[in-house]
Image (tube, rainbow, N blue to C red):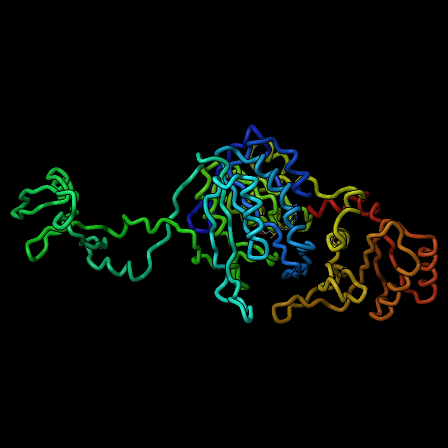
Length: 494
Ligand SMILES: C[S@@+](CC[C@H](N)C(=O)[O-])C[C@H]1O[C@@H](n2cnc3c(N)ncnc32)[C@H](O)[C@@H]1O
């Protein structure tokens, strides 16, 4: 299958050579501090990270058709707390980076100045190569200060011997307009002086095709240029050199990147994941700082933009994210966009990819942040998580029986009225008060059936469920996490 990279070039899919050093094409679910500790030192060629920005917000969005809540916490009590969180992770990243490797840290004004100091300490100031300023949006509404419309991407290398492929951007319209002249075959060119008059350092005086002058090049070069049809004989009897537009690679890329648009609401690649970065941005970084088959690591990979770009460019890749929701999203993206199969057997022979360490145990599920746990439980029993994280009126999700066919109204999926509420409590034992409040929800919404998920239930809670049924005819199905795990429903989440 041929795929397109962000730059539009066609990718010819081939089986990449898996690294003998480490497993690649793997998405690890878990805290990157623990996951990175499993990797040997000096094993990856390029690292890009885009960690939560210390922006003190709790990102939450609701995605398109499945209305699945995909969110991550972005809270640190202080900038110092954020740096303390990032420092051991960046030290680990430095450890796993090859001596010839490059490291990119994507951040913004919230913590960028502190991040730079921290990275100078870890990588050494002399390994700092540049700060890329990416114009993230045209305007940002920041009253009474200048609009904060840029991100910073710090670029470090582990030594002064590192992979570098110069990237170019095209010239502006004014510059391109100078290539006014055309050969009969349509090639556009402009001409430049070939004489050395006025230049310091002399030149070569001779006569060529009846024109005598002090030339910039020796006569052998002049003859070669003529043979290559690169001389322009002017109507006034002069000789000038032609420079063709199609031989011009553009301007070597500078540190200000204002030519890559953010993911807007109409973008085809938009998945709805908060802070999803454009593929073109990652495409550029990966092309500049790695070669085919090199290993790319993103240790905060969100919905996997870096992994998709790496795969499109025939690089090996490793992704890590603490959020099971993010891992599922990127696995889907890898399957849908890159056409790579999630399959252990194929992966063993260098094709396909695998997701490791999704929370299958009660212990791991207890450690999940509450919204991740809610997402997990609701989806595991076949429901759709509720839209609002707060103000959910006691409903964490809804189950629509198969018979309730969705109707499409104004682009939104608008379901028929048949649905059952789901309430999730990340508690050792849900008690009578928890059941009482769920009963109130069922009465208010006039539902005949509801689902409750918790680790276990008190005896009182179970008796109340029976009593509620006798009183109202409405049933509450009390599920435990163990029930869900034993039925392996969770496995379907991957
Ligand atoms: C800003 S998002 C990355 C977005 C990504 N660049 C993209 O284009 O989709 C940051 C990600 O870091 C993850 N994260 C936060 N803390 C983490 C940790 N300790 N270990 C691994 N991932 C973490 C979050 O779950 C979130 O998905």
